[in-house]
Image (cartoon, rainbow, N blue to C red; front, side, top):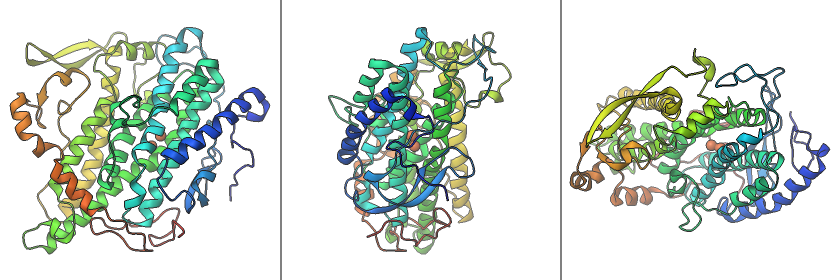
Length: 469
Ligand SMILES: [Fe+2]
Ligand SMILES: [Fe+2]
């Protein structure tokens, strides 16, 4: 079995040979723990939870599973091993050696990329602060905490880069990461979706399905970076991220499963009679979290994204899947609004990199929906989930200035106001979902609105004691 090291901060970056850095991180550690105790899971801090901990980057044994009380979790720093002779593989410096240090001229832009990514990690923990109180099963409770501690580790990963490569500014940014608060009016988190309340488990599963998946694409694009430590850090973060999206996608699938079961039992096919969540309500939650998550990719046309690409700082998702890595002569079609009409415009590809990344994300979301729809089809019901148009409910980018319905048709403010509750969760929806959120902590039992998973974690069964009483 792979063991956790005894170091105060487990790591594979030879931290003990850099005393100054080690001291700086050990100084940050108590502040982090203070933040965790205040803003991490409400309750359960003293309980023993069956959690995995990253202990190395070996693909055959990177994780260690055991019971641990969350404040004693060993948050460590792990980078994938450097690749000998690695070069820039996109942008203007193509084929030149990658950077082991921050080039002076890109210091500002790199720091912004790292801080923006870093800010999302503690934000999501804060959003999920109270969810432990209403978990549908011990299995789900454990998954929530697994996601939370790993988002904590992702914060560590970004803070390591800030401390090691950005001097005093980096240390100040690391402090700031513990000061902002999700949803706070005065000191909000940087990005919109990370200030939205996530107070029920339907929202939690939507968040891990759609918002964590934005993380997958952002980390994937940073894993291409020619700032090598950033590439190696984010690459390893992606390994943990996969489980978060698994929690979201299978969480919704299990809800859908249960809903169909209850629809079959009821003469009017009403899932609510048996304490389930009806499919149209799930669609409205989907519409909300998907559209919020689309905003995270930024504006369709962006000179920042062009600069990041040109300088090899942030690539596309799986850059190696593309043929052209310079992208100087290509154009990309983007929808714009002009004189109240929607037109398509060709923009230089480098300026459209946000949109390119968003498109990869949309295709990935659609694959998830297909799997949910297959469940409904199997059950014999005609309902199908649909991703709303990317024009729908946007706060950022070209379509922030207008209102569009889920099919993408532009509508006036009046029709938006009148129809909004058909498309987005209404107060009644929120109240209904809230009414179902009763904790089920008994071994092997589960709430009325969701089915158990097919199997448990790390080869264990669903009724394994994931959280000790
Ligand atoms: Fe993360
Ligand atoms: Fe995540």
